[in-house]
Each structure stands twice: as C-alpha cells, then as structure tokens.
Length: 180
Ligand SMILES: CC(C)(COP(=O)(O)OP(=O)(O)OC[C@H]1O[C@@H](n2cnc3c(N)ncnc32)[C@H](O)[C@@H]1OP(=O)(O)O)[C@@H](O)C(=O)NCCC(=O)NCCS
Image 1 (cartoon, helix red, strand yellow):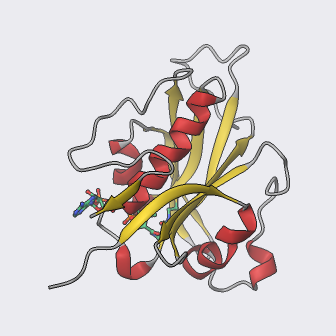
Image 2: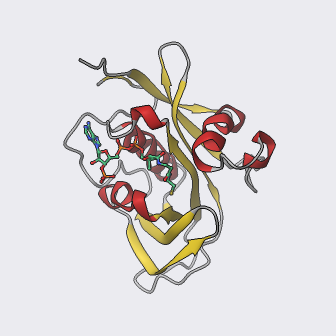
C-alpha cells in the first residue's frame, strides 16, 4: 500500500518554489529562467506544501497584476486584481488534493488581503482543479508554444472569506499539518 504524504501548507520565500516550478512547468529552461516577472515584488507571495522533512511537494505564487481581459459580470472599479502563477505538484504525488490545498492557501491569502479578482492562465488539463475552487473560464483557448493549450480562468474572492467552495476531503488551512 502506498504511504500517503504528511504535509503542511505554508508561506515560503518564492526562491524555495523555483526548483519544483522549473521541474514541472519549465523543464526546458534553466533554473534562473523559472523566475517570473513580479517574483521580486514584495506583494508577491508563495505557498508550498512541505513534507515533514522539508521537501517541497507542491507550489504556487500569487501577486498583484491587472487582468488583461474583461469580465462583464464583475464591476472591476477599485477591485484589487491578483494573478496566480507557478502552480505545480510533484509528478509522483498528484491527485491527492495537495495542489488544491495550496490553491486554498492562495485564495485565503487574497481574501485576507482584502479580496478581489483572482485570475490565471490555466493549462487546460488543470481546468478541473480551478473549477472546483470556484474559478470560471473566460474567452477562447489558445496554445502556448512548447507548453500547450491554455484558457483564462478567474474568480472573485470576498474580503476575509474562506474559500467559497467546500471540498469533500480534508483541506488544510495554511500552516495546518495534514495526514492524507
Ligand atoms: C495541476 C496540478 C498542480 C494539480 O496538483 P494536484 O496536487 O494533483 O491537485 P489535486 O490532487 O488537488 O487535484 C488533481 C486531481 O486529483 C483529484 N483529487 C483531489 N483530491 C484527491 C484525493 N484526496 N484523492 C484522489 N484524487 C483526488 C482531483 O479531483 C483532481 O482531479 P481533476 O484535476 O481531474 O479534476 C498538477 O497536476 C501539476 O503540477 N500539473 C502539471 C503542471 C500544471 O499543469 N500546472 C498548472 C498550470 S495552470
């Protein structure tokens, strides 16, 4: 029987997420090329699922960035806008809710910072993950060279609110240790 990982989701320096980000999302690039614009913005925050021995199992980062698309359903005047990037789980640990736990931490951070419009350019195979976290698609899919099909996804995050979509499994808050 496979042993389920024991991990906690915690806020970490962006640098701690780079190796897994590169390995999963940009394997064709050098480590330093996995750095994203805005990583050094003091308002950019990274989260990671960390094993008991400190190994990084899943990562994401979120920072202020205006959405380059129109969401007719939302009055964006004065609404803070946040972009989620660099979402990646170790290949051998996918499908166990770890990525969702990291995404919950991102959403909780945006809520704690006053809420707003949270968006990302989602890889199409990951659309289900974001949908379950309350995201909607916007516009048409497009194909990024080398990487593959993408679609814009977004959701509103209410200030101070916990994630709006309840999950069936255990979903840890940042800093909570979870034994899966
Ligand atoms: C997308 C990604 C980050 C998701 O990470 P993850 O840890 O596998 O995420 P989760 O386990 O929370 O969810 C993934 C799937 O597992 C399922 N799942 C969640 N919890 C589960 C559990 N406890 N037991 C079994 N399955 C579970 C979910 O239903 C989900 O299925 P779906 O995506 O087909 O709808 C990961 O697949 C990845 O790194 N992919 C490659 C890079 C990538 O595409 N990143 C996103 C860029 S936008």
